[in-house]
Image: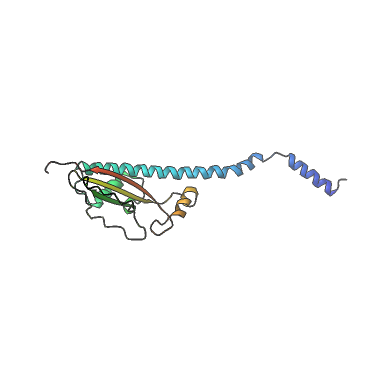
Length: 190
């Protein structure tokens, strides 16, 4: 008859030799790490796509202004043009800020480094204001800032964005910025 001590020793020996469930254990340990990286890849891919679309929208809108397709546009007209092209930006017209700066080529002044972006703690700007687009042969500097909420605000990259931007202006969002410099082409009389 085996003693309790020997039975326990025999159970532990059998447990140590048993290889059932080894693959499952490895999966349980490794899968969350790979899934975490997968989620971060999705988040960074979406950020890249939205930034690419914003850059493209700004380029096409600037082209329309530069060649005279859009003469003396209002903020709302530029916003609609940008948002129509940058279709991947959610709630685009409420989350995008446009800044246009006229700069003299002969008396250059540095452009202020502070980007104007939507402050989620304030009322949105009026959509009917005319933004100064300068005259023929004037240098224009356009900056567009879009506030975007992360797709997954509780995981990986999205969580880092939310934690780093918790103030009332950002409210857990990140800012995508696109800039363009151009010269207004001289037009014939209308």
